[in-house]
Image 1 (tube, helix red, strand yellow):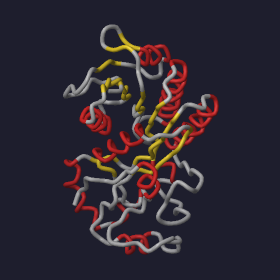
Image 2: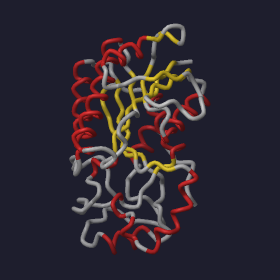
Image 3: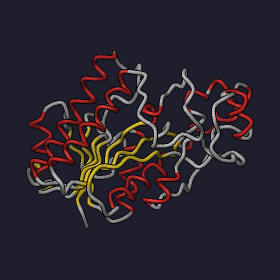
Length: 281
């Protein structure tokens, strides 16, 4: 059994990740500023913008635990507009630097962290270069939040260069949903523009957690990134119809069938063995 610290384990995705890891016999510690509503594992209040606190949390805290095998870094101001631009940028990039530098200092070589679908060009005021979108074209951050996520990926690449044993996997999560959120989905059908900002994508928190576990268990070194979304869209209308109506002229690289996602999860399926198991339908 391996010990994994999960930063942001009290959040929407964090709760699902903690549950997934516990269900697969991991020893889990939740590091967050906010205590979970329902304790699932040991919790310690940690401010990730304080390097000393992060370093201590990665070595062990009193009798709670000693030593850490892997880190799942989810904690962040969770999107553009939640706080001011400068505050969001400073908090998120600082926290991520502290997580990776502390992991390096104590010899942790297995880190999975939350990157973001926003790097693909969200909210797609400028249409994407092609559909479905994937990890192959350069990042196109359009907000301070996305810019910080983009720079995090550059930062992690350098940590992997400094430490060749390090495996660091960035998961570009789509919009995280829980079952209670699905009641709103049928209302999107009347106006495709309501959710075109992320190509009508979403990720069930439980499937996001599956992706995290698979990334932890993936045998590799170096940095890699994966889009993590559900296999379908939030819409009832066929995906090909939506793409033609809202993004006319954007090249479609393969035939689109049914309600399939436009956030390509082909790489995650191929490399990580990821396959969504939950959905709103």
